[in-house]
Length: 493
Image 1: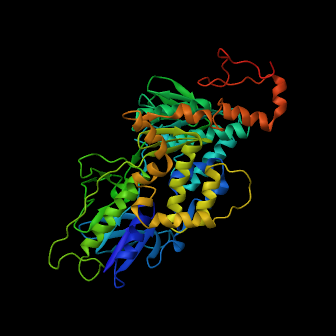
Image 2: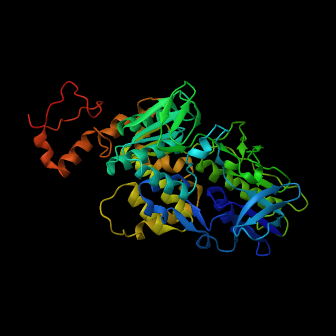
Image 3: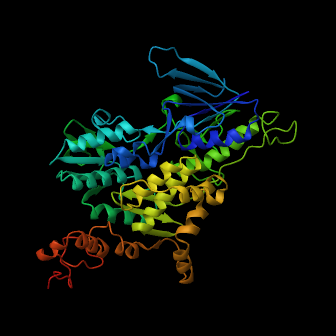
């Protein structure tokens, strides 16, 4: 019997690694992906500033699997009724191939949707692959004194805009960065408290944010808006939506909680539009892809519930499929050198938010055995001083637990909540607070990377004490850099 996993992103990697443990030796397991590596997608934006991180956020598939056969090819079609997938080899001169299977997990992810907006696809850069990040960086470096426009203020757009703003500052590019969102706020599908904190971080980093701004088209120098304006652009990044993979005709099939699109085919992650066991639509994120992958792996095994699986159900009984139930594990987003995280009801920024973001990435890398890469990622996310390699021995021991149980999985809601913000949540409970708890004012004060915070002021003074002679003003909590609030006085007075 043959089981195929199409795609080696978050969902595909999780499904395949679980099936390696569940399938008997007689079952063939094949993983198909265009690349020979797994990409830690939620860190891709970092390459706009730090191209050398590409090696850190990619893991060779040959190093991930114990028994699966890896095929490097492009999946061009999937036929659940016939249980076949059509593969186009990466060698353009080779013929396509039909791959038959007894069960399959389709984990091809989503592609960027341009919605047939005139000129947008031709003139904008998506942010889905390493070459995209490389091209965005090159565009920015060539556009000194110009304008960068990012269309779409979901998490990907926020992170792209933050990196462009930091790159412009570090390289003194004089590049204006504008983030457009057709909804009335950034991160519109997330809690308002989280979205407000993200907006504050963007404002602090001189990203111009325009909400209620609908893109209608673009050319090689402008972006046209529905209100009749044209914004100049020298760099145009588009993160304004997603569509299904080409192998599914660009559609994201509507899925019920068992994730099936046929008797033996399951669609997992961003490739499908899932309604979970509670009847709720599920967001397209990495954490939901990993959660769904656990269900899909169990259901693939149940399709092959005879001699091919290690845990068969009662002989002769039809497979009883597991259903996916969405659990929100919280959110973390980078905004340049800053970050915002929501874990449980707590919204935080600064070092705590960066720790959440680092824990998610490092936990994922550690769970696939890439401990050295996990150590480097933590080093970069937290901005630890020094440029030399760090000892990953202790981190390896900690990360070893991530693959063992759901309790230590970074996509499990309880783990991050208990370990990183548990004390803060206990305090909110004791005060009788309900709903989201906005702790950003507290965490921002001690955030050394938030422009205008006291911690940032002290770091700048410590690194360049001669600035005091110029009359550096002591920041006041709640004021943004450049303001002169009551009580703010030059530090030399």
